Image (cartoon, rainbow, N blue to C red; front, side, top):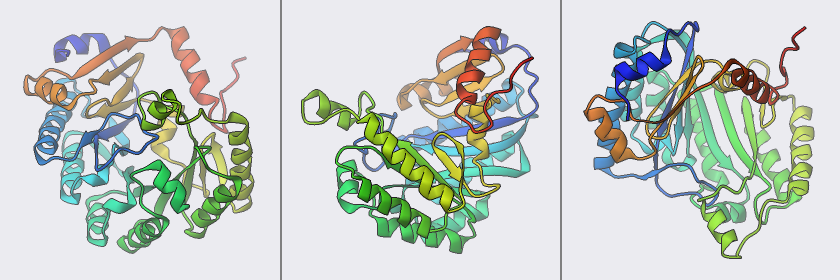
Length: 343
């Protein structure tokens, strides 16, 4: 854990003009078998500890670290499952961010949603409170695959969630899909892509399955019950996605992301262009100037630290100019725009 005054010295003067904010909501109703992210089970006492800690963390960064004047262009609620919280709780967090930070009027404000945790009234509350972009975790439209992945809602729930979101006023809707996981076929992936396109989203993310250490799939493989991803097969599925989505009018603007014209995820573009962002919540990561830092991945430690008015940091790194250049190269090469060539 780090005192505010000490961290202020490490950070130094910070001159970038704009800021992105990421909020990590660690709660899930169940863990998906491919997931190794930090998560917490949904319990009222844990949720209250998170809400109290988050409110304090926002205040410390905005007031004590004097970042309140930086124009906030993007806000992203990820997890975990942000929509596991009540809509009023999510609206309260967004209001706190607006209170402490200079959120621009046209800011992109995204939230990830599990289709089994949304309702018409809840989505209306989110839209009215200021959320502008909804990212729905579909992963697949094949029921057998969804059972294998664990914790997923069926395709009918995804279609219903998208319909409710549109009725609530969301026009910027994204779907998350996954390919190359165990027992998936080319034919089922083609059907998933077609089902996704039929919903007319503004944005699609197609992520190659990776075997994350600590995930249920990884534990199964270590026990001899599963296998590592077939990279050659994943390339075939990736080509299928590129061909189908480009033919449908989408632009592939990043390795895993496709959009209709003007619907790039502005928040994620900050990561790939190495623009400053602050992460709030347990395990959240941040990047300001030459400093990279992350919060402790434990809700109890996170909340206790903030009660003592100390930052819940687990890691702080200062990059050299050469390291910053390499970082920009690695992230920039993920995008269609690439990396500027220095003459």
